[in-house]
Amino acid sequence: MRISAIDLQPGATILADKAYDTDAIRSFAKQRKCWANIPAEANRKKTFSFSPWVYRQRNQVERFFNRIKQMRGLPARIDVAAVRGYEHADG
Image: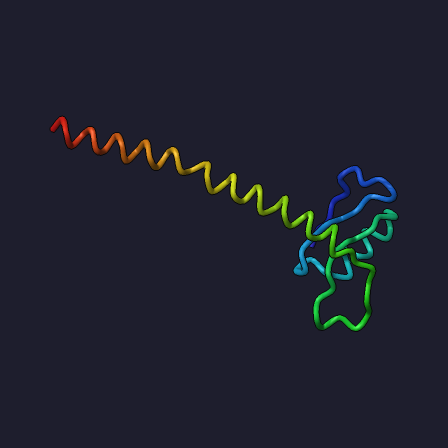
């Protein structure tokens, strides 16, 4: 896995899902003096600092963008259905 530094300033927070709980990402954050707010996987023996409140805020933002992405296609589908209906009425 390749991780790139996108202007990470010391003290920044890296937010990610449980799937990204890897030693590579945690060491990457530690090298750049950042805080990785990633929930630990169940099979981890070592515990890490984790804020459920910050994680919940990240999750709400992610769900908001997913809703926008889903609603973006609705008008196009309605317009296509309307056009198809007019084609049948004319023909």
